[in-house]
Amino acid sequence: MDLWQIIGIIGIALCVLEILTPTLFFLNLAIGAFMTAVISIWYQNIPGLIVVFVVLSSIILVFLRPVLMKKESKENKTGIEGKYIGKTAHAETDITSKSGVVTIYGERWEARNIHDDVIPAGGEARIVRNDSLIMYVEKV
Image (cartoon, rainbow, N blue to C red; front, side):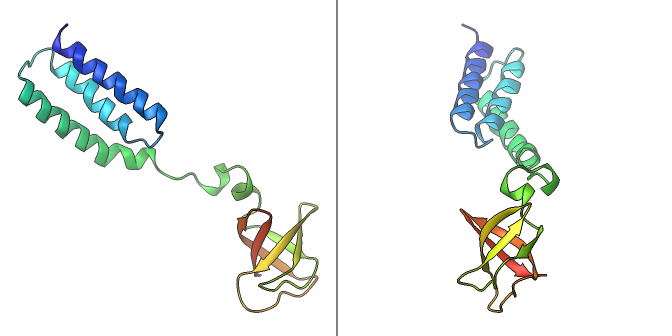
């Protein structure tokens, strides 16, 4: 078995590790391994290839991983973040830090004010975050 094939198998194993632990860490190492496998076709010095692998993987990790890990904007989110967070809701009851109810999109949610003041019934509240079935809001 040639050296480039062995390094290619290592790259495939790193891809499998990335599938099992989706952290975008092993993917960078796999890309470095595949690039090192291509280089090993012409350059056969194993200690030199280890240095090439470490350098390439480090460069890819520093520059590519932040691009891959970039968070999506609010417009692209789905679920609670995209539908409710940052939106204005109607206060059905007085909302304090201990109790309250808001209505948004025709749905009733338990609500808690993140500040110490009271949002009166009939007022407007902006949803700041969600914790299970409770919306945490602030006065608009």
